[in-house]
Amino acid sequence: MDFALTEEQEMIRDAAREFAQKEIAPVAAHHDETGEFPSETIAMAGQLGFMGIEVPEEYGGAGLDAVGYALVMEEISAADAAHSTIVSVNNSLYSSGILDNGSEEQKHKYVTPVATGEVVGAYALTEPQSGSDAGNIRTRAVLAADGSHYVINGKKSWITSGSVARFIVVFAKTDPEQESRGVSAFIIDTERDGFACGKTEPKLGIRASATCEIELDGYRCPVEDRLGPEGAGFKIAMGVLDAGRIGIAAQAVGIARAAYEASLDYARERKAFGEPIGSFQMIQAKIADMKTRLEAARLLTLRAAWNKNRAKAAGLRNTTEACCAKLFASEAAMFITHQAVQIHGGMGYSRELPLERYFRDAKITEIYEGTSEIQRMVIARQETGLR
Picture 1 (spheres, one colour):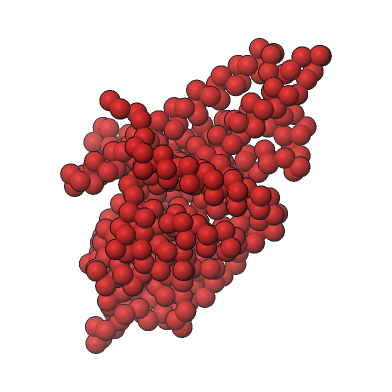
Picture 2: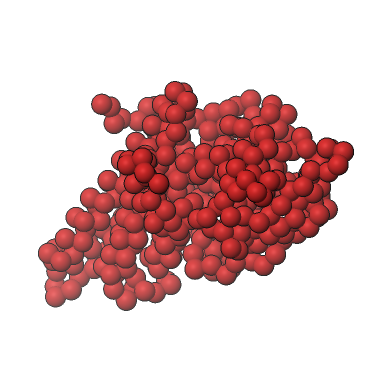
């Protein structure tokens, strides 16, 4: 068993860390305060290959593996979770679904400009009445009589990058009587008639990730822009979420690491009763618990990423490993950021330091791409074989 990173993985990690600390960290507070989409730094991320980390070079990506992706996500998340959310959606939810299920024409047309950072991609599954219950979507896609296009109508909610994306993978019912087996996937061009953005979501954290509702009203989607066969949408969505959960686990690790490192520095420097607070047993206990959970979360995440490469080569799914990583890492991030605020006392509660932002950002990792409750349900079903 070898836990060492390859030379290539170390290089991509170091490049991501340098970029994140030099370009993202200085502007993170501004984008959190204003909610402004970080177009400039996201374009830089595309130029460096971070918007298509696992995308093969022939489609404009960096051609790296899932471990490389997890390492990049941790580094960007340690600087700002909103940036890493945009990177995650581009890589996991948008590009991976097209790479695994799309035609060669679709890959070149819809993955290449997103992987290079020329435009942004998004993923639209959630609706106002269906989050975890993904099979309950109401968006409809009806095939025209001449078979040339689908007419899509419906509303999607909580769509990351929805207001800035050029292309969006959208899930709609083509056969409502078949429930989840009647869901199909489509690639939407947001510059066509019939597409509109709805309200922007007023979020607690990851405020710069441009989360909004989108509406499709008589949108005409050419049949060649259907992703995979009719009725395969639910399977595509679940496969994509397996990949996405690794990215969110890595995001949680990055947020937690930033909070932990800030706490270490503060425990060494802050004095009370004439001693550094890090010499007090109560603070030492917090540091020890934070460190242990951080390391465990990172190892689970890297194991899930490593296993994704192995499982894909064997034609297997990586569901349990991805769910375990996301579940543990997200809850570890909440624990660690909570302890970090407590260690910093009043300053942890102040917006003068990024601790309160880490705390706010960490919460979403327990919710999106499957809540902690859903992760537990999926893990148990995978283990027991029971529904």
